[in-house]
Figure 1: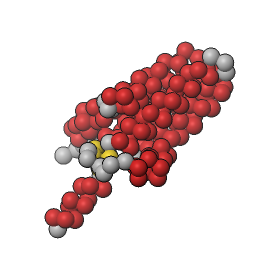
Figure 2: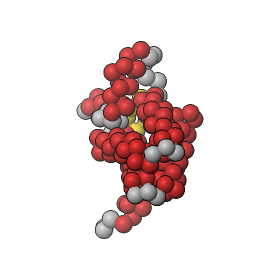
Figure 3: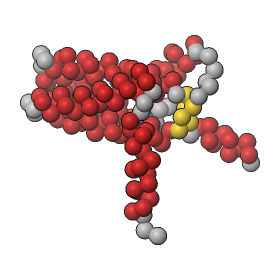
Figure 4: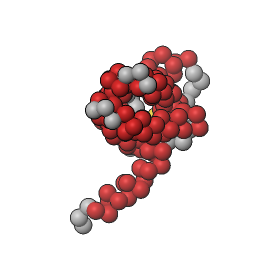
Amino acid sequence: MTSRLTSLAETDQVDVRGPRFAAWLTTAVLVITLLVSSVSLGAAAAILGLQAVVFAIGALGGPRKHPYGLIFAKLVAPRLAPVTEREPVPPLKFAQLVGFVFAVVGTVGFATGLGTLGLIATGFALVAAFLNAAFGICLGCQLYPLVARLRRSRLPA
């Protein structure tokens, strides 16, 4: 029984390097979005819309189903030293949900000609992605315990 519990606990955690790799790719996509927005709001909407889909997959399926996570698992992880640090999946899924919300708002802003809205939403997502990539600070993960606590306090007894 103990080995089964350990196995379940490990499957609900992932190598911290995977989400950080995903954050670097996300950072690149968001920087490209901002650069493209100076030329074409429509093209920026398309790029950010694709990133929104990536965020949605991560929010629903978690890091193991996330497109960037799959790239990490297939191409990068096999070349790295064994895992030494893991992090839980639920906060990562929540962080992807937050990214999804910003990406949708930014996509709508760019698509409707509200470039400033698109820039602000993309900028917020970029700051969060860069903090995770460069410093291992996941803002969505930091918010997760608060949101989980609020959700539990609202459940009927």
